[in-house]
Image 1 (tube, rainbow, N blue to C red):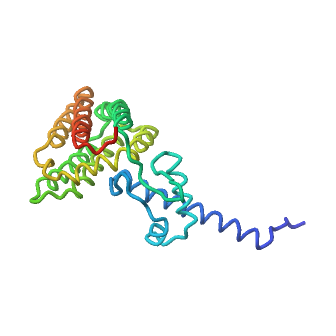
Image 2 (spheres, rainbow, N blue to C red):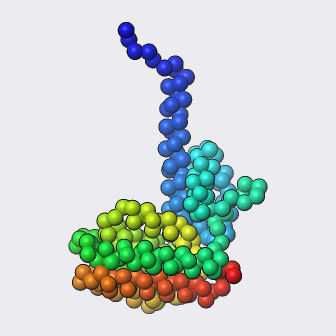
Image 3 (cartoon, one colour):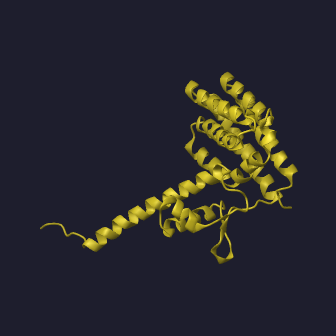
Length: 237
């Protein structure tokens, strides 16, 4: 006896569900990338319709993506279904900074032990892009933001621990908007600033396979940026 086949309607429903899931993941990935890269600012409201139009999808996968990101506390759903990027309090930001020092510092230390010459060269290339953008007249703050993000994640990927990358990305979902807003609002701070110095020390440590020095350089980079953000008064008490 030939095996029974599902009615046409059921088969089409399954295809539709698979497509919908793929679109939801795609929208989630796009929004995550914008948050991590600091392309969305703290307190910025999102129009779900504009997101759907920009990505060429329906509202359903956009709502799915927002639900996922809200569960990670990377987005907030306000009364009336408005969606915005969370605004961190001073205490929340300090807690996030402490977590980043522990997790990202560990990643830098591991990267110093494991990074291949090609991975170190990739990190150095991102540093060169950062220096070029930061040293432009006027500074290319958007380019510096992108290069800084690429440098950090190339470093963390060199640690060779995928689960660690997932943890760091979740931290950057919350930290990215305000960290990179800092660079965009204060482009003059980029020229010859603490980030350039920390990156130079980091690369030197990676080339010498000095895990402690790599961790120290990364921690100084995070700490200096956090101190400046606190000084700007952008964080609520």
